[in-house]
Length: 197
Ligand SMILES: Nc1ncnc2c1ncn2[C@@H]1O[C@H](COP(=O)(O)OP(=O)(O)OP(=O)(O)O)[C@@H](O)[C@H]1O
Image (cartoon, rainbow, N blue to C red; front, side):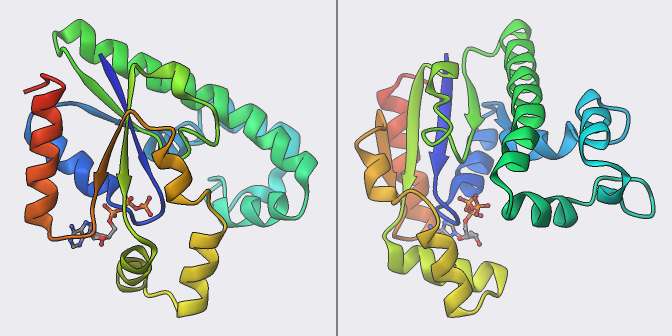
């Protein structure tokens, strides 16, 4: 079974991923794969350079994510073109890694996909698990983790689909407003309910 783990910025997905790994449940990380598929030598890298030109490369000829981000931020057409290159490569690699774990004998694999609902990727998973936090907690954890100003933190939270809208879409929700210990207990309960442990 493949479980889709999702949430919002600083809601606790990585924290939960690490807890899952401590149960020996493999986690496939969409953000990590999105960085790997644009590394030199990968087909998405070649396509990006073909499409956007060498000006998106840094001195070491790696893709400069900041430069590319700046270009697509103001140009919807270019953003679509980039997504059209990167997203299929990410999906393919995620499937490959999940299949590999299942072939190895793991009965469950988790896919950590921040934009699982927004990108309509629920067809890739059998069940969805949302890590929810209230906005105040999300805000203070974000400021603390990334050293954002209040304004930077709020604008990032506001740019995303509200977590309360994702609650309706998820098969299960873990609320992460409390301590790490509480999170562990709730995750443990959910995994038992789903007979994963
Ligand atoms: N229950 C908790 N108690 C205290 N701190 C927590 C708790 N859960 C998460 N955190 C902290 O909040 C921050 C955000 O958590 P985490 O990085 O796991 O979120 P995320 O959803 O993976 O974020 P992003 O998608 O933005 O990378 C981290 O600094 C983490 O250590």
